[in-house]
Image 1: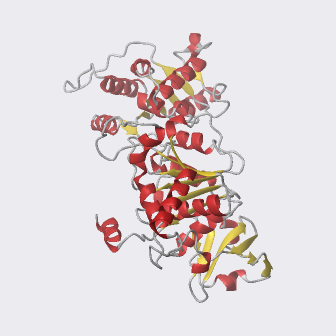
Image 2: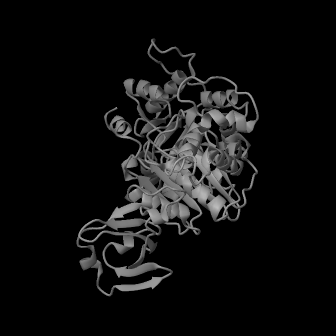
Length: 478
């Protein structure tokens, strides 16, 4: 009897989530993301999955995947559908709840203002019916559709967004890659301090309260009393090792004529120029120098030191306004209108020598044109659509406007990297143009969070705009 009571109590505390179609089409694995709670899939959701399964879009692929997963769960369990199908075996222990499918017609009285022919309203009707059948259990509608959630709440039903795809609830908590050291840092971490020099770099081994929180390749800095900039080589333990940086703000260390104008740009160039760093993410608002620094580092390492054989640039072709229709030409020519940022930065990097256009380093306008042709021969602009199955060897791969990529697209691109390839992702999560992507669920946010602390990757959030006083003021007040 006690066991029965315990089971009944458990049933009362576990929630019953009613899934909307857009949740399954957004993340087919959402069936296994609700842990011990139960899931209910209305018949209308299966109808909508069926209607959206045709085509080559991401949505159609996800609809097919969701249908296949439902089929795997349901096949062999037809006799106990009404009692619910346990998800433990199908999810390999990720979920311990039950899946319920609508096995009977539900006649729920919706307000007369809501037409029952509309799929959303039929799903809301199912939620209302389940609330009456299980008055003791929390019945919650899960939907990515804001208006559907508003409608449900207006009818007194509980509704929420699907949060599992969000890496972070608050993007202010996103890893910045930099840490300001407290003013008493050397007093609190100086006990047993070890210091040594190797290859013109100074290393420090410290121990203290900050050490467990320091991540590998995180940049630490201090302005007062003694300016200090370093990055963590060994962290997340009782002791940590710091290594001093190359000062790219000094003209003698200029990269393709570019010097770092602020602290974060110096950090970024250290990541971009380091041979052991395979993956770099740079975040920052417009005008912080993300593309310029990356291109300067790419050109130096491709044309001067010959570490990479060529530069490949790709970006998501999501228009800000109305689309201008089909574009003529080859893949490279079709991508040209999207690569205005590349052209602007190449103009800056290939500017005439201050000594005078006629006798400068480029040998006047002819020399400048020849240099530009050489640079263009080493830069390939590629479309995302043709990336599947490729492998890049010894390439410098730049993914521009990466905030518009989904985590799945981001995985597809990063896994193209072969031996000797460096991948750099640039973006500003405040400028997402892709529908259904938010700052929390963007592929760029996803990789920054997942790669932090890996020995061969680094991240910097660029803070200060270096474009112009007009652009800086516009970013603040508009």
